[in-house]
Amino acid sequence: MIELVSADRCIACDKCVKVCPTDVFDRGEDGIPVLARREDCQTCFQCEANCPVDALYVAPLTHPLPEGSPARDEEHLDETGLLGSYRRHIGWGRGRTPGALRAVGPPLSPPGATSPSPPITS
Image (cartoon, rainbow, N blue to C red; front, top):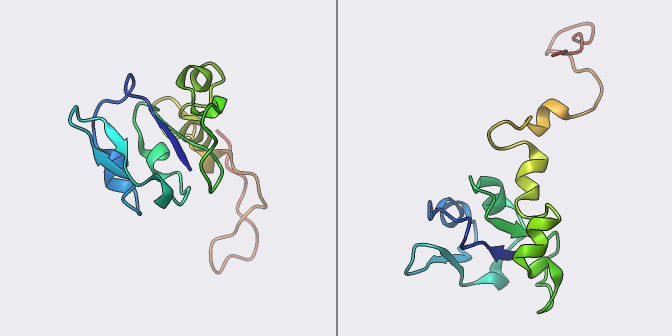
């Protein structure tokens, strides 16, 4: 569930507002998104994945964390590397390796091929 929007990091681009499938955010008077319907969050991580400045934190839970939880404290999230961690993990953002390029699995063959494709090496 969405737990934090960092007003210090946010650049008011509205990407999180636009990608949210359940319309969790409203645009605040200062342009910073406000968690207006947090209980509607489906924990899809689209807002965190699309935030270009890692200003959002979505906890991997389907219910809100209790008040006072360290995972709702921006300083704690920043110090532990959790703020924007989903985006970093999937490799979205300048200088990051996309998650698909790090995926591990069996070699796949193109349709109709009789042998697996050679592994891709960088």
